[in-house]
Image 1 (cartoon, rainbow over the protein chains, first blue to last red):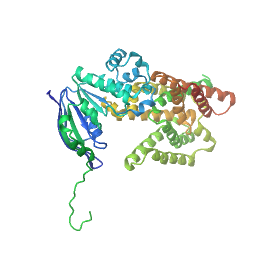
Image 2 (cartoon, helix red, strand yellow):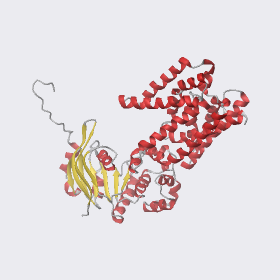
Image 3 (tube, helix red, strand yellow):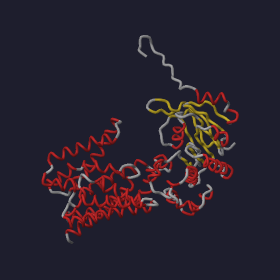
Image 4 (cartoon, one colour):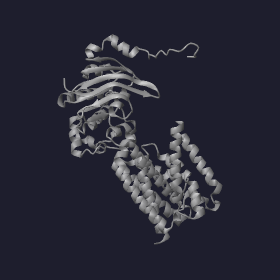
Length: 234
Length: 253
């Protein structure tokens, strides 16, 4: 196992006074592919935003110094409002045309895609473009929000293949959040079950027992029991 | 320099700068914001007309005041900004009508670029060139912010700073725009060139260039038509612009 690239200790995030993430502690090692699994509203995207440093939190979130993060967002609904071709999309990040061509080859798309409008791409092609965009600054950590959400069945296989190849080719550390079990089994070395709190962590095949899954997905939201003094209205 | 040429040049520069900035406002769903901001400027325009100073100078502080008020109210009340915009801009129009000299109402409401003074024209052109330059500087980063603020933040872009510069530019363009199309029609000079070029553009480069060009073209044709028909230039600029939009629908990709 490689060095620790991310250390999280006693992480708490509150939104409008309510705990969205409660007391999370875990480490991520170099080269690891960590899936953060949980139902809708479990705080997965919030956790990603903490990793990106765009929302306030309490506790420790410490990245190793050499870490360069590439972020692959879930969907970009507004991108269709801008008449942008693929080359121009990469230019927003100051990536040259020749560099963009290299990335296109890496993600399995031909050079002609440079001139395609981003809004005209299929869901699978668009997802690969987003991955390529994140890879453009040569990151060693990749953060993913729902790698397969909104990607049609035909495109899913191409995204899987790409991610599996990246895992072999570039010793990338990958953190992704998802609510889909299949992708966790297929890609992840380690899983972190999240529903505001941590429910389980470890190798997917060992930890994702039917019982653990039903716990994670079926458990009703638990409320704290507040003890009230007698005579006080609850 | 003849009065006509002076008006034409100022109109072209203001129209072009508004079209260019408007191309950034369309993806942010902010095209309509220029409307209320123009209405808000009316008390300032009225003061400028009464005391005989540059109407952009009158308009600018009121636009800034309006933006600040909406921002403060939003933070305080958590009400949706468009509702607060309605409160603030309607108040602006109401207040303006208490003291707007009625014989100059047309200038205030739909603009009067044909009687622009020399100094006024020069300063407008300089400010337009400045706007053009700054918009060009922030274009890539603003486009990324428009697509996704989180993605922009992941690129270490200071989103707050860029949004502030962008809002100041909108305020400036509104203040300049009221000279050409008055307090009522400012939304149109930023919105229409951008939607027209959206219909035609295959890339961001084309989109920017076409927005700028349609801005210039509609000002030019409006001002020429005004000479021919002796109707006011402001509304003619908007109608020309809308006509170009209709034509672009035929070629829509």
